[in-house]
Amino acid sequence: EITQNGDHMIIKTLSTFRNYIMDFEVGKEFEEDLSGVDDRKCMTTVNWANDKLECVQRGEKEGRGWTQWVEGDELHLELRVGDVVCKQVFK
Image 1: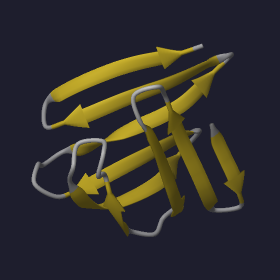
Image 2 (image 1 turned 60 degrees about the horizontal axis):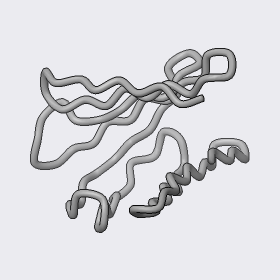
Image 3 (image 1 turned 180 degrees about the vertical axis):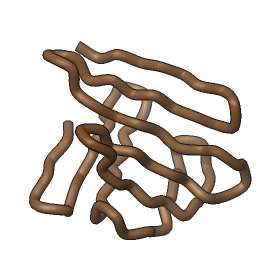
């Protein structure tokens, strides 16, 4: 679930295994606490790149982040760490 109010966004990832809520202002760096996801903290910035949300996470690994966008009735998510890329499509 994604909620947007101007530059304020809330992205909720809800599942039977765990729930994660990311609450942020677009373009402003913040400390992201990923306890329960992969148990790390990082400095995160999310920006718009055309019609896509691009996230950069600064921490223990270089090139970490994600890109998220909508095409038709599909939500696309591309996760990155270094040269490794994982692509997911949600309907």
